Image (cartoon, rainbow, N blue to C red; front, side, top):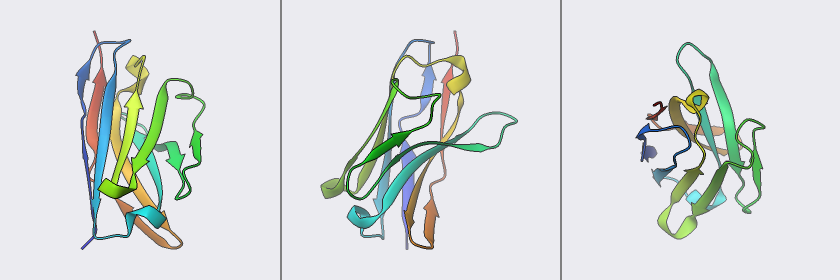
Length: 115
């Protein structure tokens, strides 16, 4: 059974930092492309960042320079280091594993940036 479990969300002041984690099980993690998505209140789910199985990274324009995606294949873990958080970063953050037509989602973790 495939499971993706996000953690690390919480309440943070604007300008602060958080590190999200996604623990994967039931898949051969190292060969999957991994992504972070987010869904703000009343908004559609948007792509945030991708890290390929080869370690290449791509970021959305709204987070470029502030967020860093990384992975630890030995631990089957995906991370998102978020810095200089803004109120508009408030959302539920989801991790996503993709290989060909296989696609898996986690349950999400809430990030709230507010003063």
